[in-house]
Image (cartoon, rainbow, N blue to C red):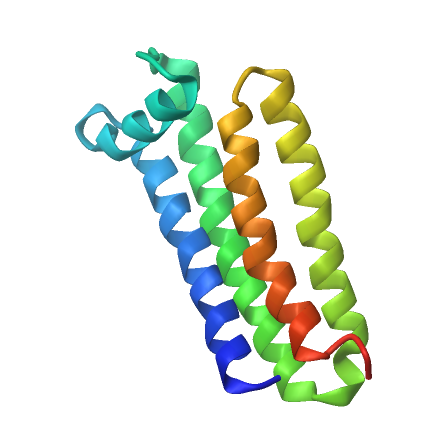
Length: 138
């Protein structure tokens, strides 16, 4: 994988971790502002963050941080292996597609279609470098 695609994927992993930290911040009233602004923009108006939502944001944020680090580790391992890593790249791609289908479908079904639109940007951010780099053609 060439340098630009490697840097791009590493940055995407960092963005996922950062987004996870924003979500986790929504778990506490003192740090909820970034998450609140994002949700109110997606919902197109004020949105209450109750105790159940705070727990969910804390868990979701932790999962997203872990997912970003896990993707980073898988990408690093695939790059270290070189040509024999095509199966790892396919599994990385499958995990991203699975997330996209579930998250986007439920976002639309629950009235948060803007989240699904944001998901398209994440999807392209991961799929484009994987496809363009040629790691699946080996």
